Length: 415
Ligand SMILES: Cc1cc2nc3c(=O)[nH]c(=O)nc-3n(C[C@H](O)[C@H](O)[C@H](O)COP(=O)(O)OP(=O)(O)OC[C@H]3O[C@@H](n4cnc5c(N)ncnc54)[C@H](O)[C@@H]3O)c2cc1C
Ligand code: SF4
Image (cartoon, rainbow, N blue to C red; front, side, top):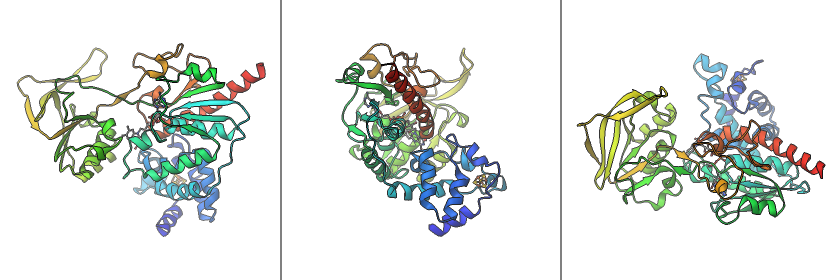
């Protein structure tokens, strides 16, 4: 492993104009980190990466590097990019397990973070570093959001999320698990108790429905629920997955590792509409999943799913839609069905208080700096953008941490 990483690092040309960093949403200082690694300054390389992105190690596992740093690396034009993800993983793993977090003095006021996914964890680290008294309120019993309850273990080892949690605690951040803000405690309670600012990083956890007959039957599940804890499901031998995004691919690959023998992924348009990355689709197929295109689910029965052939038309906004061709319906047998057609936000935080405006789709409306329409409440990550990526949540949170800091400084100066 070490030899291979070093050999690959030595392939880096230390470009004057490093396209790898330009292609990275968080502008990871890749060439500088590689240079430090080759000078045997592994800790310094890790510090550089962590200070730029506290989720550097997570990103090294789950970012779509083929479209980002590695896809842009100059060596990719010669057919073989520097294997940046593996180098970042090596450096950041060492750093996360060896650095000693500095504990927040907690003397600059209280900040509440709703949600402990990538958005919440990033803000928590950055504000603790600025000596705020940070509390994370998390609905689930463990921190991590989708990192813990969505992305499967074989793609992101949970030991990393555990380590992040330890690091949050060592940084002086308080964590309240099993606490859904908006259900019992509300935003108003938090302001009453002295929190100066509240960050909503609550993600998108409401599975979208197909709205067809049979969706409530006992052998039908939503992918986002299934992935929370796959070992409690008994799916049988054959499974149909409806939808072809990355979540569908994770569900397929997980099911194949939990006893399903036949997994069929069915998508209602042609391949060009598939939102999963080519990489994820290929892995699902290598794992044994099959893909069927241009089939629209019309009904779910106890025996499986009825699909019709679909035809594409343009709706009034010019978007491609699929409709069933009458008379082509056919039953596809399966023991279980998983629906994986995206997620939307739950609106419990906004609906339990006043003044937080939501868009038509239920996402929180913010300005370019992360302010919501309610003073003192900020939002970022998927709950603002809809389902996106880990690195995008981190980028947003880096900016919003500065916004919150400026807001509190102004507020306390005015007192
Ligand atoms: C199955 C799956 C696989 C994915 N794979 C990848 C990948 O490989 N690479 C990638 O870059 N992205 C991937 N993504 C997307 C990525 O995980 C998300 O974009 C990212 O997690 C968004 O971070 P977040 O902090 O905004 O939200 P989340 O990770 O969703 O975290 C939100 C947190 O808020 C908590 N919460 C919600 N409501 C409340 C409340 N009222 N009170 C308190 N807590 C609350 C939730 O429990 C959760 O812990 C994947 C998504 C899914 C679903
Ligand atoms: S683009 Fe590739 S070769 Fe150039 S600095 Fe980045 S990793 Fe090194």
